[in-house]
Length: 433
Image 1: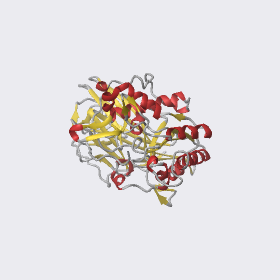
Image 2: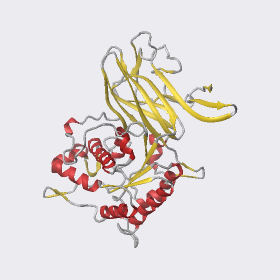
Image 3: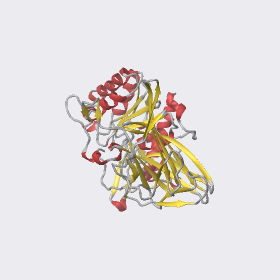
Image 4: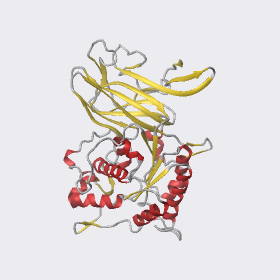
């Protein structure tokens, strides 16, 4: 095996038999803190701020500190930590990446939550006792705007600065982290689940906004990568016209999945062909044909219910759109996850007042949004999606982490939910309603 190491670029190993290249695998291995560096790793000190030249480092927004406990094990004797969430980035090309983190402290407890890119939840409250170290592995999808080298995804202005659309893999560490090492390997053997949707699905960049799409990675083991192509304010029509479906079709593999949830913004469209049983139905049918044509699997999700109570009972704010989605799923013979029904059940179980805890309803900040979720609400809906995967007996169910069956009639207690807020915040409501 020949290997060439370039500063700031993942180690590129080219496996050769004679003069024939069999495979390429890019691997980055980083040892955090201290002066001793584990063999085969690159040292990362607290002073290593990310730059395009080096291609790795901490984002400058949050200072970090090194802790060195001493000892013979170069990898575990020291680590990086911070009292606030901090970001570590590595420059990588588009693809799926297996990320393995080593967490722990030889002398103290640690607790770590890990998010990736635009606040995708990857690991939740990983705890270690003093002297205990754990390694955890998860899959992060990185995407770019290019489509077959000929055109690009039409991004909104607000997307231009999102971590999801830059040329880096960024990891966020929060709570009481003790980060000893990170290993990143490009992988080609994952089932990719592409998400197509609006603000209820997109990876929301800023607190306190959140979506089920950025929570669902937490519930999958390696073997599945979540590629979230949703964006706030989109309908089926604008998703297609901004070439986001073209992008998915350009990289999808046989056996991959596309989960599609629209309705909120489609309802506002006007014109002779607008409506649930016209353009909305036709575009869902188009999705089904195109995804099947690539050997992929389409899963249709009805739109999440808006919080809309009358006399203590939820009302339907989506008209015939959920019914149209159900009919397309039946006619196209594709799985359906009825988020409209399940979220309606969950809001009623929480009650008129309790359901406010699932939304961005914060009167003290002049926020009263009955469409967009906060992290607690998004997390509950991600569990509903996971149950829908199991109920439909999708192959993906084999890769779900072990967890109790989730019943929307009995959502998790709000007071038991812990979410370490990310640094970026905004009072500006996402596009769409």
